[in-house]
Length: 112
Length: 283
Image (cartoon, each protein chain N blue to C red):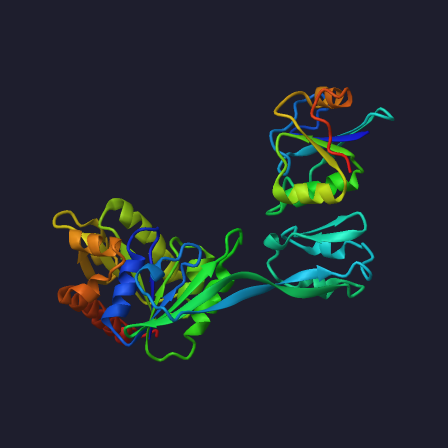
């Protein structure tokens, strides 16, 4: 499963950002291969439509599940169209949240 | 002659001034260009109103022709487009209808359809022709509706009073660009003066002749009047801080229709406006 979590610094061990569209980076974790990647969020500097930009980046990263405190209307529409599940989490270390989601301890992703 | 009524903030008395000017100087036309929070219809009424829709073109992507090349997605400065799976999603509420995506699409897959964003209510009420713009909830810009309302009065050589949106943003600008004169409504306080300064800066930027109407005027300290005197901005008139005005307005009535003295006060403001326009060498 490939997870995507918004983060504010390129530090993999850091906390999840408190927003999705304007977070500075995205942490992409592939639990099958064990690879991790930090990519800049193109929505962070967008004048408008940040949610669309970040959702497009998540789609392009090939993620299956997004973990975020809140997903906006436009981003939700794109993620849903792409069959990407969203898991709601208030706060926590990004990698801990991925581990918890993988263990089924967070709300189950909405599958398609 | 077209007179735009604006102020640096909401609640200063734009609608009070615009609607009462229109009612005092019939036959006239009142345009409600505060299309995001219209309130002119609280003072003018008719059982025979017409309603026309205002729409904007938004892109429609033909999935058969689309090659998912992303030219449109990369071009859109407002991020209204996204490629998901085998198609392009259009976020219509973010689209500014520039048409660029359709122009640039190498496979001719993008056409346009009208998206209704609001409308214009029109009717006649005792010598005042009313055109009021209204924006649908969720629509991000009312500017095209303001333009459509202004267009209603194109070629009208009579007296046209434009009730602009509050503040100093694009919607306000569209409301007064076509006007011969700008009336700036201000409350007689230091806060009112601060907001008036913004409005003056805006109309000066566009070289529009302008004057001030002081609303809720009270005896004593007069920061707005003093500032106007020191900055060569004419004070066109003063509306007293009168409970009768508040009571009538709160009941959806126009003080100019109910009291001859107020009808005269607004007629005098119009005389002053016309004097200013005639004296303006740049007009």
